[in-house]
Image (tube, rainbow over all chains, first blue to last red; front, side, top):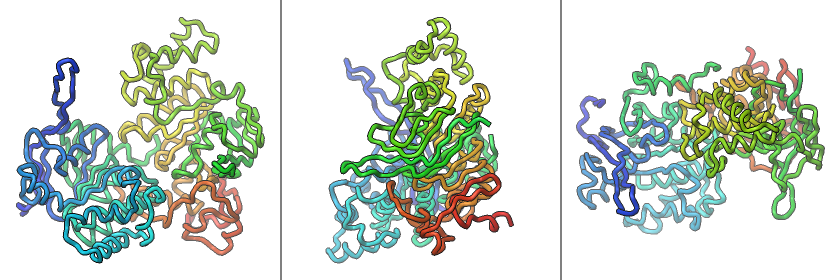
Length: 268
Length: 320
């Protein structure tokens, strides 16, 4: 595991986590078997650090996010957020989860189609005791921060484009000023021109707030813009990790080599 | 030079509920040469899939057409009239985006091949030989024939789908976003496969993609589409390295390149909704080089064998 010097205070620390899903293998006896998706994962992220988790489909990227969000209890290992084991008690989980801003994968499915953007943005503030004026001010600030006009608050998700929805989701994740930003494939369902806008936006926000970012993606080129450190996941195992430049210039694992090569510009 | 596909002023639109026409492809002049890999690049909603479907002959009945489309000398679209008899599935064939859901789940791969091959009057023995030979070029064993689609992996299904369209004997293959459901490290393999298929079978491939980098790597020529029009067309290397149209330039600039961390350009705004019709250049609002003139003047020019739809292309800036 890559240790960053002088840092005992990790924002996130994932220790020897093995996690997976139960599936019913025989319907007659209802036998359930455990299929591990993540095997012995170690990962740490300090305040303000940006880490990208790269992997192909089925490598366990999304499962890793679920484990960190407290939605899937690992069968082995611990997840610590600011030193607090999030699976130790419900109270600990609630305290930890408030520090996380999560941007889900598909902007077209992530917002409730029945309510206005305004209502969706208010939801994360419900648990905090804000007055109505404060709530209004906070959501207005949030949409401004992501470069959307105030009018979108009155719109329904169906009348916004993918790029705008992604901005709304980023605004929603930021509204509680999280210390950790979890991004699940933030640009994979967007066009290239919108993708560049979102990458630039996330970077601007990062430079203003310096929160920790854990990015999950299959796109190395996108990750290069959003993270300094990279973890390559394959079949639920960390096969390579390190600083971005080191990994792409000197890939040690065969898979990483193949992956890096597929981004090169040479004609085939 | 034989032209595999040629379009003259081709426009394609769709009827909405109120019987208005939404023009999705506008006035496209395109020439695809025999035996080349021709790439249609653009963002979602630019009309690339619609143009591709018109070549493959799979336009939905509620579509409206204007202009002409000629495939190997046969006119398949002449204004309202469409006639794909003897072309669809025989001269042209379609490789769907997601082969997992487009192959019949209840038929073994062999049965799917047999359905195609018996149409050509082959008996079962020769058909099997033919199918095996095709699969072999796609590096799949004969054993695959006995399997059902759900027993194969995504990459294998993709190759089966390519094999099936080769089995039709079609001379033009239209592949719609073949790499979008494929993992990054397999993309390269798949593109190499397309090249091999072209070399071995002499087919013409029309590749539809949003990945301009992929287009540059794997294709002979690219056509960049914006708002239903082809804004630039030319050989892939020069289009990518010396773009003439401002949109192409921005499209190249916004793509993140691994190992070369440039500042990502932001194209302000979003692509126009399909169906927008107006005078002048469609890229006007987002163009950093725009001019008053662009509002009502757009001109197609030919520079170094490349066609560009802009009255002041980026010639000086890119050559100096």
